[in-house]
Length: 360
Image (cartoon, rainbow, N blue to C red):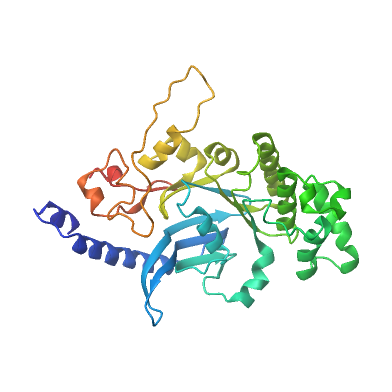
């Protein structure tokens, strides 16, 4: 039906959009009924997060900003999922929605085999120690009036990880594992550098023995040499504790080093998803190819063809019709302007959303 409408002299965008919405709704309903994967720590199905922009006097939302639109993935214990994309594409919002720091607008979040999508704050409180976050800015994410010992001891006390008389020994052992000296215990955050502060943030996240850690650009505010230390620390702790990471970043070299799976986001939607090997060996989506072409090559003799994207990212408050990327895509066709591409599996475990892959 979509092709027939598109081939007529005057096709109707509203009809195309209605047909797409109906098909997508049926597909989502089918996916929601599927049994949960028992091997996964985290399973996200068709996650959506909207923020209201305009409301009527009665409180009815008349305009909304779609920050995250229909993303899905699975993550096992000991695995790292890297989420990459330009600033403003919804990476951080996705991480916060998974932890329910932002209430999801749609979809499912399955953690440890439980659907936590509609959990209230008291139900989530019991799960907080199993899912933690490392924030981007180590300078503003630590309370300035508390010592390092106080910062790390508080979650241990609240969640009763160890008996009271063992808390200090537990914290000192944790500090040692995170590369922090024992005499830092009585010091305040302002006495430390950015790298040391981020180590404190990592220690705080791990103090309650979580199973899932959302790493929200944890090294973007640090020097390159310090970045390497923090990344190696995260990998070491992951091996020791069998942690699952969702690593949010815009630095592809860092994501390539730490990740097992990679998701590429653009304007709130997942453009491509697959294993690290598949994504770097055979990027399918034009946006993924453009991102990779921008990575500097350390070999001065190698020549890489740079794919330049024209224009700016459209506003998420008013996204373009059809494929979200068509306004900047050098290969865009007429169908891309009207019909959103289906997010499909083209290789085993390798998904993408692009009409070019269907030979349209």
